[in-house]
Length: 148
Image (cartoon, rainbow, N blue to C red; front, top):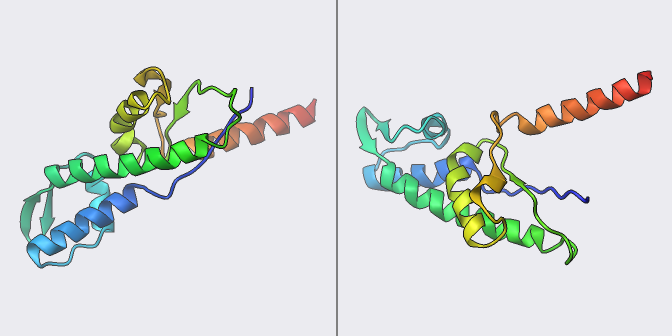
């Protein structure tokens, strides 16, 4: 079995930048994207801008859908490099945006027949550290095999 892996540039940071830009235009006040990231990650739908509260739920949904579409396009390009006889068993979403984009990605990947069911798209328990934990396990396995 050949494994394939790849990365895309669209992320939670991209989402925060687009929402911040939208709020800046709406309010005339400056909101830096990094101030939004934690709110987005914990699922907060209201944010404070210069002492006033704003509902970002519609904007958030719009940009999550938009960015998820971009991610799927980039993923399709990556998958296009696989041999014609390759098949996808699982898609694992990692990184800061995995929890935010995960449900939308499951639906799009199923609709586009990249996977057969949403259950084939996995968001690890700790998607932000998933790659680091995986590399740690590989390194530990190599260390252990050299001890034998």
